[in-house]
Image (tube, rainbow, N blue to C red; front, side):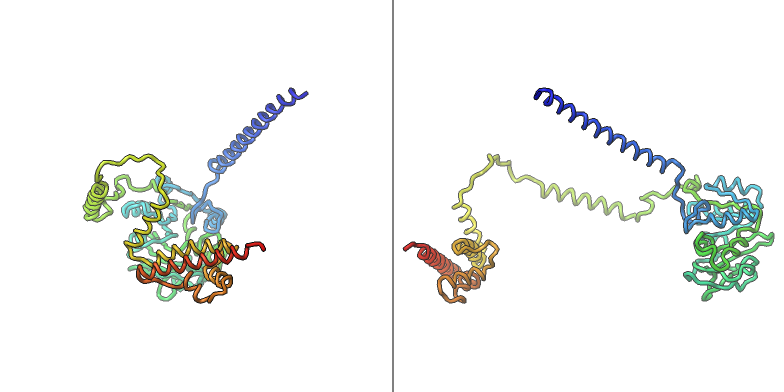
Length: 392
């Protein structure tokens, strides 16, 4: 009966191991499927102002409202798609900040649209498209009245402003706050307009229901039957514009300075790393006698003329021995050891503390005298303990 039982145990062990590996592989496969579904199954992290984003900083709500009003919204996620959508020239272009586009590319793209709306105005776009306008201050969560003749602003009434703008020549400002404006608009002789406003305070899903933001958004974005919402991509940069290299961005003196530092480091390594002779082979482990160690430490203390340090070493060893003699723990402080010694010998506590803790020798002669007193004190304690332990 014992043989079958012994043979069945390894089989059960192998079976449990196989089941464990199978469970691990199944778990890894399930994790891979879930990760692949999240990455390639249609989920995409949307950026701020993205017209497909339903998050707080997205703009899907205003897009849906425009579509219900009969406006055809085209989302262009690269420059080529935006140019194709603007081919007819009768659409409104919504433009975020596009630092990858050059000034000429920015003008060429916006010239294809009937109206341009800058929802994330930056200094360069304001300078190029709004006749020298510039960024101003910031007025968080403030409501302002239009006080201008722009139809979209006057019809909307009070709206929220955030980032403020300073108008250039011929540019009209709306929603004034301390001499700066929450909306700028310039209008050409052909009726073409360029409008700039802080989209984060007006167009996002969170800000749209506040005050007259919804009416302002519809008035600015719904000027034509077609709206092209351009989402810039990194690949939209001009092909003939090469990105500056690290050498182009660094000052001219950096390269010579780095070469000089490398040369100095190499010279220092050679200087400090040279060998002063052949290596000496020595068999390990090396046995060093205790007397040699003691004499070596004594020579070091004598050469450094540190009598106090030498006496501290003697005291530390003597206190350890005295503690064991008196039955004290290893954590007993030096003063408590001195007090216990004084109590056992019936001696003056201050004198015993001076021998074990406080006295500081300044010369070798004082060090020898202190060592003698320390030895005599230890011998007295040994004699007292030995006398107490004698049976009568």
